[in-house]
Image (cartoon, rainbow, N blue to C red; front, side, top):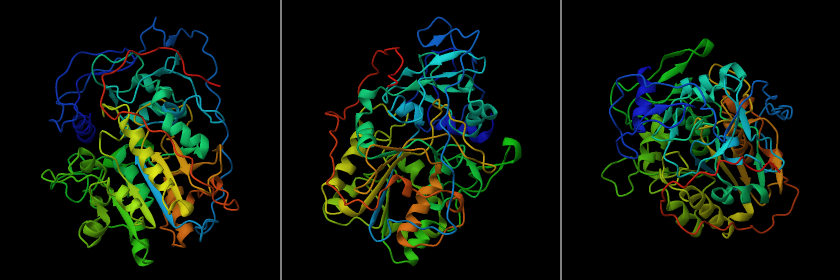
Length: 486
């Protein structure tokens, strides 16, 4: 276990580590603590326990779930969008750590799976594990490589599993549909992308850089100290993706490359980055601010006037800005940890309520008729997904994540199978506002216009019903039946 991998696991307070053998011993520690780095490599049990309802004996393993072929990729020479002049607000809502199969298993018209396979050929039915369930999975570069297994997508039973008394084959899970009603309703009413691949094959740090800059300077490893960015302590390191899946020493996490903020400032277009604060003395402090304040890693922003002007805490300020007609051209919205959908966030309703509340607020505002909302999860979180990601460079693509597109111009009841990545959202923003390409993954990526019909007249928003309670709740007894697939 290298320094960064160990530090990452330490951030999320390892109680115990096991794999498809299930369970695990008890462990102490706070629900989310910045704890000392583990001093030894945890033991991995690389085998699903037999005799459980979620595992079938597979001496003659069935064929793997078929993958729908993605539509051909035809990016233009320069960013363009038919939404130019019609879209005046783009809102990117970023949630945490869910694969497509984990959140949308069984969604009508989408390429999803209800089972997977282990590295030994065992067929494993996906089991319901709620958003509030207190367990986590490795989702750094090492975990990705294990699960990817050279494109066989069968290493999820060999993954580091973090937590005590977890069900067997923990990575082979889906979120129960009664907890994802907000997400499924938005996806059903508007558009869903089932080929949105993470641009890199690692965790949140690099993924967030792709959403603001279409690159991460080759970094795939999260910083080994917090905050993640230019405020990190001296000596903080990252890792670079090397040939053949190797990891190389990386830079201090404070970058000088151009971002969409650079382009928007030059074009005199407004932008806000809504995030919790990472300052411990702030009333708006949240651990999400330590990890997901993406522009803290951009020296030009952190050291310049944009930091005080455009990086907004608390993140809930977006609701006031919507109500007061202050929504800028581009908004990125980061959650608090409880509202993030991140495993171990200990909340079944925080994420759907947070996301649904923002979308509902925009839907009833004057901005609705000219807004495009992208809801996506920054990485796969270690959860099973059955579609092998195309490998385009040394660091990606990574696994699929869900992406929901909500807009009066979004195609209704539509699932796009076009290959997308985070650069696709950057490209869409560039095309809508006539901005130059950043020359990174936005150059190779298809835009997002396939999820829209800009010839249709903007219709009224269809509001979603939010969960009644945002209170935390104890994990529920699991129903080990496979998800519906109709």
